[in-house]
Length: 179
Ligand SMILES: [Zn+2]
Image (cartoon, rainbow, N blue to C red; front, side):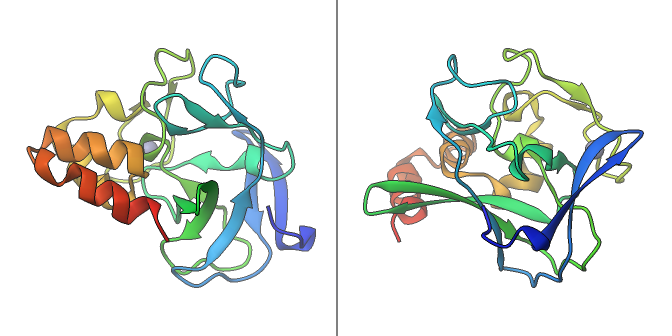
C-alpha cells in the first residue's frame, strides 16, 4: 500500500464503493502494493486476493478492499518474488488519469469464485464483458486467450498447460517469479 494516502480516494455510489486515484499513473507504473496478511483459502476472508492455489492476501481495509472488477481493467496484479519474499502489486496497464476508477480483472487472479460463494454479475459495460464473473476456471479458451497476458503466475501456469505448452511451464514460472 502506498505511504501517500492522498493518492487515492474511496467513493460511494449506487453500485457500492470504488477506488479512484488522485494523480496520473503511466502505463507500467506500480499503483499500490498489497500488504495484507497471507492466509490459506479456507482461512482468508471472502474479499481476499488469490495469488496461488492455496494462498490469499487479505485486504488491509484501507484502499485495497475497494478495487472493483472490470473486464476491461486499467491495472493488473503483479506478483514478484524477492529472494523468497512474495510481494504483490497493482501495476497500471494503461495510462490512468487522476479521478479515474482503478479496476483489475478478477478472473486474472481468482480460480473459482463459485466455490468461494462470491461469483457476481458484472456491470462493467465493456463490449468484451464476461457477464457472470465466476473465476478463471469457468472461462472459455477464447476468454482465457484474451487475458493470458494479465494472468498471475499460478494461473499462467494452468493456462500454459491447457494450451499444450506443458514443457515450458517450469521455465515460465521461474521467469515470472524471480527478479
Ligand atoms: Zn464485465
